[in-house]
Amino acid sequence: MIKVSKLSKAYGDTIVVDDVNLDLPRGGVTAIIGPNGAGKSTLLSMISRLLPMTAGSVTVGGLDVSKTLSGELAKRLSILRQDNHIAARLTVRDLVSFGRYPHSKGRLTVKDKEHIDRAIAYLNLEPLADRFIDEMSGGQRQRAYVAMVLAQDTEFVLLDEPLNNLDMKHAVEMMKLIRRAASETGRTIVLVLHDINFASCYADHIVVMRDGKLAYQGTPAEVVTPEIMRDVYEIDIKVHTIAGQLISVYYD
Image (tube, rainbow, N blue to C red; front, top):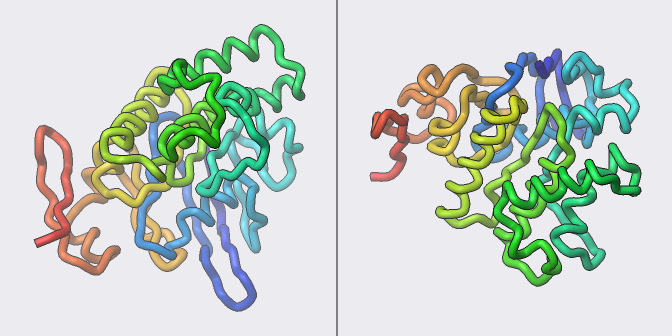
């Protein structure tokens, strides 16, 4: 379980995450949604210790993220940041290999190479394994970064807008892969999404942020309602059940 207690983040007098209390269930997929500026990515960054917290505490699988040694935490928790830039000229395989650093410290073992190969295959990147990252499309690069995170083989996986740079086809494929990874491996995957429909169709649990605060949380059926969506996004949103899935329509 990921437990967030009285968590806040402020920049000077500006509070971007305000006294959030949250228990994220172990296993499955949790989607964090909300309008721009709601504090979604900041919350995720504090959970992963990428950003220092102004107040509060976070525990991941019982480990206090502010006190646990980095090497130990990296074996339990991995994160894909929203902005990924690597200056060095690397192949896909090189990049994915970085995910094994907490385990190998740069000296890859047979087991490490098995994890790397498995992650590359999982993302259907075998034909691109020896291509340089800077020669690939944005969507292909994004898949390579997700493969790197999966190769880290942590129980808890945090993904900040993993659908960046993906067209509709590849976004659907990515969400199916995330759903499958959680179901088949028992991982706890927490991701920030902008698309309500991807959250309602693929997540087990949805957290809704608004103005830096926790506004709502629950199952898709509990959260994705016209009333809650109107309250959060300030537009009229119709919610339909299509093929057993909740689909939001927010245009006339």
